[in-house]
Amino acid sequence: MIDYDQIFPELLIGSYPQDEEDVKRLRESGVTAVLNLQTDEDFDYLGVDWPALEAAYWKYGIQLRRVPIIDHDPIDLREKLPQAVRTLSQLLAADHTVYVHCTAGVGRSPAVVIAYLHWCRGWDLDRAVTSVKQHRPCSPSLEAIRGATEDLLRETGSKIMSSPSSSATPSARSTEESTS
Image 1 (cartoon, rainbow, N blue to C red):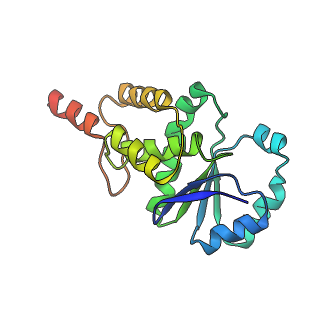
Image 2 (cartoon, rainbow, N blue to C red):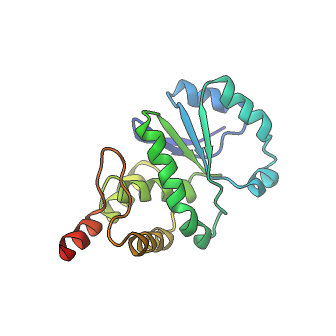
C-alpha cells in the first residue's frame, strides 16, 4: 500500500504504487498525473509489474511521466534534477494534480519537489526544505540540489528556470540585478 502526503492541493509526494488498487486510490485522491522517478533496476529489485501499472494508469486516466534517477546517487540526482523539475513544472502548468514518487518517497521525490519550489516558485532553499519536511518526513540530498542549482546558474548565466506563473529564484534575481 502506498504512503503519501499532500504538499499542496495539486502536489503529493510518496512511495511507489504497487498495484491497481494503489493507482485507483491515487485517482480517488484527485491525482491526474504521476511523475515516477524509479529506475528499471528499482522495478526489478522490487518485483514491480510495470506493464500492469501502466495499464492501471491508463484505465484511471492518469498521465504518466518517468524521469528515472538512481536511488542514493547524488551525482545522478544532480544531473537529472533539471529534467525532473521541468517535467513537474509542465504537468502543474497543465493544471494536473501531480503525484511525485520514487521508491520510499523520502529521497528523490522530495528533492525534486524542493528544487521545483526553489527554482520555479522562487522560494529560498531553506524555506522549500522546511515546507516539504513539515508535510513529509524525508532526507533529500541537499548537496545534489545545491550542485544542480550551481550548474543551472553557470549554464544560463543568471536565470534558473521559470514556470508560466512564477519567476527565477531569489539568488538568480540578485545575480541579474547585479549585472544590470
